[in-house]
Image 1 (spheres, one colour):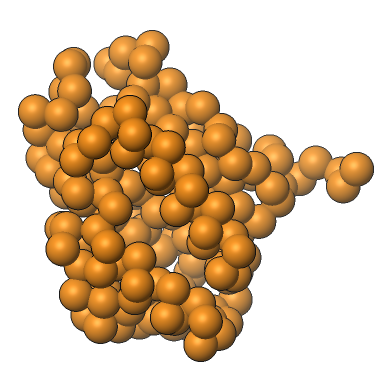
Image 2 (cartoon, rainbow, N blue to C red):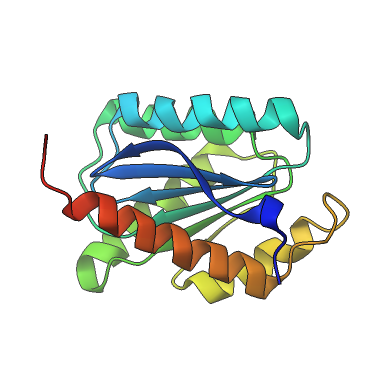
Length: 172
């Protein structure tokens, strides 16, 4: 069971992107294709987390919806951030978009990872449970109690639900 310190706190929220911190794990939930400005919001949150947990963070990047439209600037930013390796313990990208759209997103991320040559462990998955099973061992020794695959999967589910709630709120 995750400790109270591992409950997610939203650090950035809008209908198309929510970012959460829980202990030394960052979770992003994307509901639209990224823009450079939104990617930079994610990296700003990453720097904040790294200030508290230097060299010990992991990232669960959940792509829940959106069309696979990636500008040249987004492709360049993705490769640049991949090379920086801001989450030293590991990055798990999870493509939850079904069908051909999901395949397009997966192809983009796989290519960006290949071209970016990340300095940290990085993988692309099709399900949160698979990603959690991979990310938990990457985080061994970074926190007490240790992260388990079940705790990371639960965190992912809670962040997805919270992001969905935010996405369905009426605009102010």
